[in-house]
Length: 434
Image 1 (cartoon, one colour):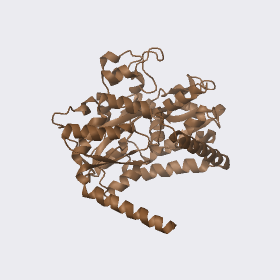
Image 2 (cartoon, rainbow, N blue to C red):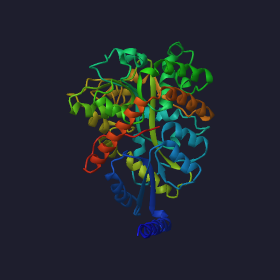
Image 3 (cartoon, helix red, strand yellow):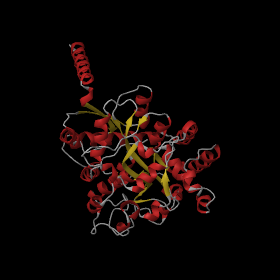
Image 4 (spheres, helix red, strand yellow):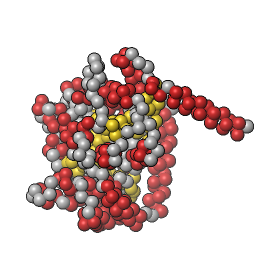
């Protein structure tokens, strides 16, 4: 009986695939991170697209959780996804390997909403080493954020988290969690360790984040080895959960995860906060691109344009908890809350009129913070050396207690996700970028 059911399922999938292939011109294949969109917008786009073009389209929406898995399907499998949402360093690699198509901004009578992307994020995109190409012609930024320290002010002072040095303070041993994301950790710490050279003008900040020399890798590895005994876990997603339960006091984290944890902790009377250390850190972003093997480029362009509408950007932020790359007056007004936030300088993102506005310092750091941050880069053939370093650092620190804690945390997270999906709920979600 089970064999018959399996055969029927295979037949159904084959028929479905055949029908999709037969009407591929009216199918849009979107490949995105899990929990990274207001899913109601998918059906709304199909209706909007028909209104704008007079043509029908049906979205086939698929998910990935690791950049490299997505890249492999396109690079080696020549998958015909029409729109994907890779991270900064993967966009860099895809451009170098000629895996992307330029995005035309001609939408006829439909407005070009891609022009709503904040100039600051366009500037970051322009730092991509695209092998002579202008990355702004091939990618439209979607979400962005920083890497910093999520901390519990009950145990750790705001003054202490102004520096990355707090992560190797022995008094916090066993209460520290670090993102299992070698690029983010390596980039942020290298900026910290080369602060004097950056401040003196000897090395430009962006050049530091491109450096994966043996000397620099050894410098970061030695620092990590000096602090790893205090690290309770290298985590992909469970650190923020443990922080809300006060099982961790310090977590090297992404700003989106930090905001989620701060909001969740507040519900149960726990106060958490977030800091980007004074030495500097990295800015990350994900962007929409059209892969080389796309078969419905027109619908792909319109989908990207649709996601750049201010009202849709606001909805996506409300659902997933990350920060849209879209700027402008509508976004600023939606994010201001004078009762909750102190004024800060967000002029780098929203323009001169936002030099003193009450917005979240987690999601929109003050300009003084942003000035000491820059984007990460693909390390090319040096990636293996970085991975080897990361494995050495983590492997030497692994112990039974760590594995037990990780297993328990993952079980709790899975149960929480199962329960949340049984309800219609628009909360703040997260996913691993690396």
